[in-house]
Image 1 (cartoon, rainbow, N blue to C red):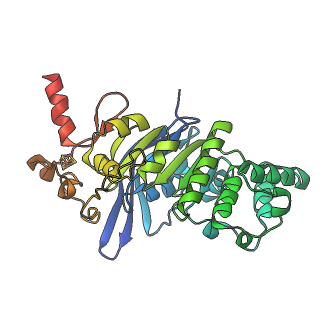
Image 2: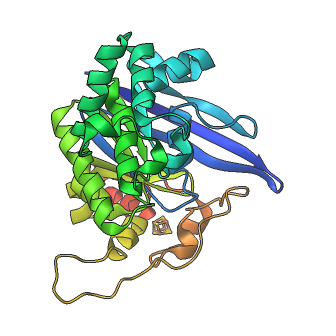
Image 3: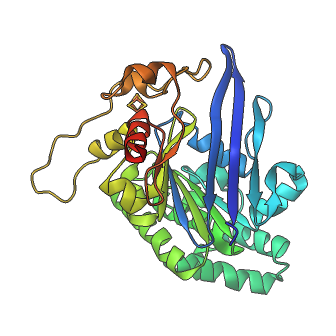
Length: 330
Ligand code: SF4
């Protein structure tokens, strides 16, 4: 069956004073219906630009979609008009961001912000929309939903505001929820609570979710599959189990080693990945991770490896796997 979202050879650039940043350099992935996909990487890896492109929210100019295709529910996103996109964003595609204050309207009660969408996209009347709004606030765990729908965003704490965002995003029953660092601005306890809300909702609603995060740890509890991005490319992809039990790319391995261990009593020292991300105005000819990679070989400086199958559903972009694949063939 067809995936609900299919991204093929996506390339996105934007202009800075120094030249053209090749922020997304040929990215392919898909999301099946009801599935949760994590897109992981450090800042500047292209994950947020990818997410914004899916929603057609990248400012152009200075950004440009150079090539590729994004098929969502059988339709090409890149061919849609802004008007069609607005329609889609409020209804079939929901989104939540790191800072709810920038996406919530401070001058409208949270109730209004939910009911407006319901009346516009699902053609509900005022009473129906209000009932649904209260239901949604309850669903995301906001106590006293009946009175709180009459309050303004500033009357909510950070964690409660993020719950409101989730309620707004899910009210119209979107097929896809895109969550970009939804817990990064929150403290650890509240982070865990918001992740619990998402986990619980994914069980109840059949919404597919794309979770964008710099924290591979967050992916473990919530996602089915993972895409690891580095330097504007996908460097590894696979199921959560595959990625966590046998990472095939040195960058993924580095991300895993830098995670705080919760399962051992002795806290092992965290090993950060040293070095800085590549300059995407002048992308390297070879592997983008080479300057930071402990396994780098001569070929890595010269030629960029392709993403290669590593068994199961796992694939990685690394010469180490290419030589293993050749050995296996020989
Ligand atoms: Fe390291 Fe070479 Fe693999 Fe790149 S291709 S991750 S430099 S071993």
